[in-house]
Amino acid sequence: MASHRRPKQPSRTRVTVLTTAAAAAVAFSAQAANAAPSEKPSKDEVKSKVDALYEQAEQATEKLDGAQEKQEKLQKEISTIQDNVARGQEELNKLRDGLGTMASAQYRTGGIDPSIQLFLSSDPSDYLDKASTMDQLSAQQVEALTKIQSKQRELAQERAEASTKLKDLSATRTELKKKKDEVKAKLASAQKLLNTLTAAEKASLAQDQANAASRSTSRVNLGNTGSASGRAASAFAAAQSVIGSPYVYGASGPSSFDCSGLTSWAYAQAGVSIPRTSEAQANAGTRIYSESDLKVGDLVIFYGDYHHVGLYAGNGQVLHAPHTGAVVRYESIANMPFQFGVRI
Image (cartoon, rainbow, N blue to C red; front, side, top):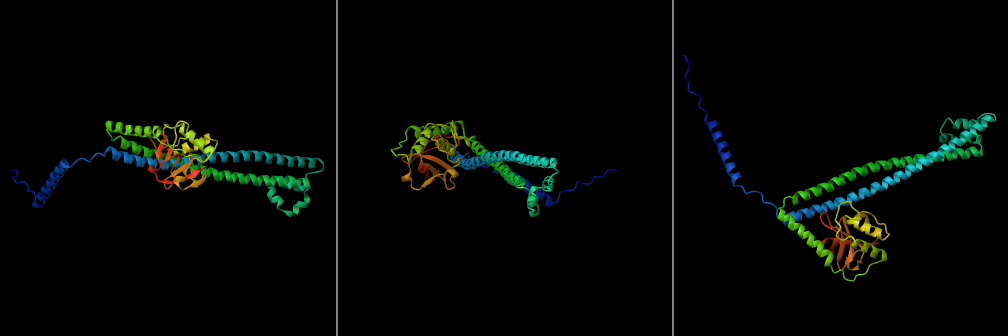
């Protein structure tokens, strides 16, 4: 006979929990529906954030330039040392061949001198350090052995130096990659922000940049400030010839530049070699701490960490490569935190 038991009723506690959960879900849905969407940043807010990222990218760029310069210097030094080692090894081989010839001659005349026989089977450094054997050597033999000993020590030092520099080069290459990645990340973040703008906002921002570039190239009163030297005047003239060229991180001309790339290129056109980075350029000459004492062509260092540099143009203006998205142009010194000038 089938059972006709009534289904078990849910407990009061379970009903309460289910009811509370359902109410919370309904409340959450209503809150989500009524929540205001996050506000999109304005064009000015985006520009401000992008400018900050560009400045951070420029800081990283100067470190990148420094690592690149160090890498090139180390590569040249290592190449020179390796060439010296190769030549030194050839000289050492000739010295050993000479000693071997001497041994052959002695053998033909009655046997190899015990001292040379000993040398040919051991390290000359150990051999020469034994004073008791010196009276067994002729003056010619002593000279030959001493040269070999000196050359061996020289080669050992050069090989050790090359090994140290190779380790330094490896570390520099790691630092170089790190800085490249940092610059790329900053620029990618800036581009991501710019992509949030509408087409109209992007066009407006581009027009603002174009207007700024136009004002800074055709409507700037440079006054009549003189230059400190002929080379400074030549460097400034070279920089003027590339006004309008784009800023590209790591570039040093002739068609694109970063800030220190422009200044080092300009002075190179004047026949003067200065360091590649703004930080190094800050120590390349005589510092000028008063803006009123600046002359045309003086380097102008900005920011506390010296990560930006330009050329003084006169009348409170600097000619520089500002940042990604801008071009070589004039700008008021007052727009950036001036530290000091450097007279080359």
